Each structure stands twice: as C-alpha cells, then as structure tokens.
Amino acid sequence: MSRLTVWDAATQAELLKTEDPAKIAEALAPIGVRFERWPVADLPPGASAEEVLEAYRPKLDALLKESKAGTADVIRLTADNPQKDAIRQKFLSEHIHTEDEVRFFHEGAGNFVMHVDGKVFDAHCTRGDLISVPANTKHWFDSGLNPHVTALRVFTDTTGWTPHYTGTDMADKFPVVVG
Image 1 (tube, one colour):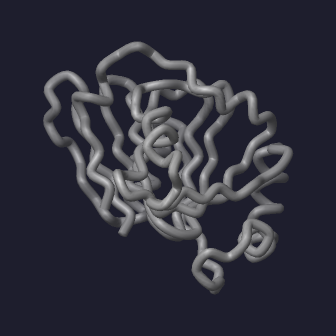
Image 2: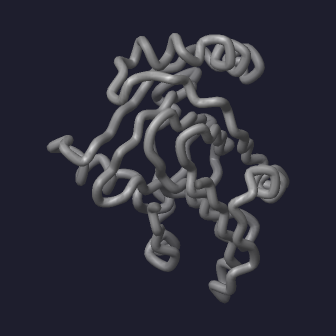
C-alpha cells in the first residue's frame, strides 16, 4: 500500500502519515511532485520489458506527450541480481538530477525520499503508483535489501539521471522503511 510520511527536517518530528492516495498527491503537489495511481496491467510475473511498455502504451503515450519527454524504458531490480547492493548504494545518499525523475511501479515497491523546504517527504511507492520528482529536488531512493521492482522510467535525456550528490548526511538521519 502506498504511504507518505512527512517529517520536520530539523526536529525529526512526524508531521503527516497517510496511506490515502488523494492525500498523498495533495501533500506532494506543493513541492512540485506528481503522484497518481494507474490501473495495473494484467501481465504474468517477470513479463518482458516490451510487454510491460506495450501494456501501458495509452497512458504512457499521454504522459510522454504531456511531459514532452522523449522515451520510456523498463528497469527491473530483483534480490537475485548480483549487482543489487551496488545499484542500491548508488541512490541511498541525498542527491539531485538535472532531469525530472519519473517512475511508474508495475511490480514491487520503493521509497522516494525528498528533502524540500525544511521537510522530509518519504513516499513509499507500490504497484500502480506513478511519481514524478522534479529536476534539482534533493532526494534519495531505496528499494530495500531484497529489492523487487519493475518500473517504467520516462526521460528526455538519460544523462539527466546522473546523481549529483549534495554531501549531506540527511539520508542517514531519515532511514527508509521499505515495506
């Protein structure tokens, strides 16, 4: 189930916790983060990237047109991937990207944690969630020790995905609970 927890970044006091998708979207909108739920395609587990893309084609084409993004692909990360720890580690520290980070979760879950305006927003995204984190938003991402994620990624230029680390210890102060 989707969940949003918001804390005061300085005091670590919890300000909001909700599993209501409408309230999640409402709380994230003021910081420019798009959150919505899409119907999940009925595909077999482990469906190919092409099958996943094709299953979401109408919604995906509308999103590509609206966002003026150039293309989409599918990323899959599972617990049996020999590079899972290195991939996870790459995104655990606070960073920014020069392009919006748009993800739709077809399978599995992960947490996008954003540090904006003195608050920390932990969006636990699950199957059926679409999230778009604006370019230059300080954030980190975690799919857990035993990841299980199949997600659509929408982008204009993949070089915009290079993480630019902030050098803070903010992610250490707000550990993610995946699940």
